[in-house]
Image 1 (cartoon, rainbow, N blue to C red):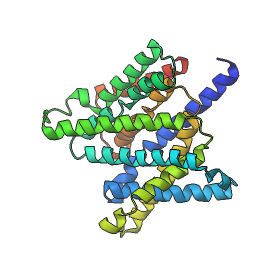
Image 2 (cartoon, one colour):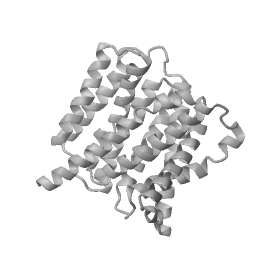
Image 3 (cartoon, rainbow, N blue to C red):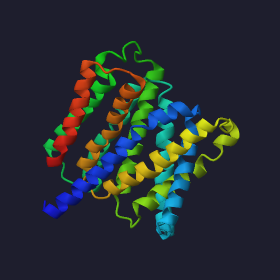
Image 4 (cartoon, rainbow, N blue to C red):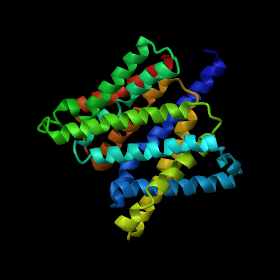
Length: 293
């Protein structure tokens, strides 16, 4: 890899990691909205769409939002997939602990590697698989899954259903990641805006059925989710994805859950055990080792 290629690869890594860091703070916002999961999906898409539209207009990039019929079909698929992914994830939390749900959902990193070798013919080294395995082990430890926190749930029908939902969601997540990697001539701004627009359209019925937020603070948190966690975060992530290999994308996916765990500890005083800190360190090491993968 030349110095020029290395520079752009590192820049793309920073962009995607920054997006993951922002997404890791979404739990704070969600906890303060007081809204149902599907309602949060709607407002996240709506305000993300409006924020990106305003930014595109004032930055002189409004023309980037104009797409061909073929491109509209492409972004529509991604938009619908993202609504499905968020819906499956939120629903799974009713059936299984959040630690297990988070872990199972992030096996999508393995799907990314497998699908990347099949459809993009990318060579995945043993080192990349080893680093990804370390990151997955780190995530398992940091969520407490291997520390006894999931004990007592057993293999009930509800538990198995929850795990199955997460596996399905993780596959859709991986497919969406790889679709975003395709060279379609669509900018990251346009891709993110259309994704939010399609998502808002698909879930527009929710507030009419569930009701609208009554408190000003709820609106503030919902706007924050749309602007920060949809508009800004996804723009950064998609800018990075388009210039990275699938192996690097796969490991960088762990920035989001790793950040969420640290935020949970720092903000809500959910202290991490020794083994959980070991997990966080494994994730950090995997991200560092990724530079040479």
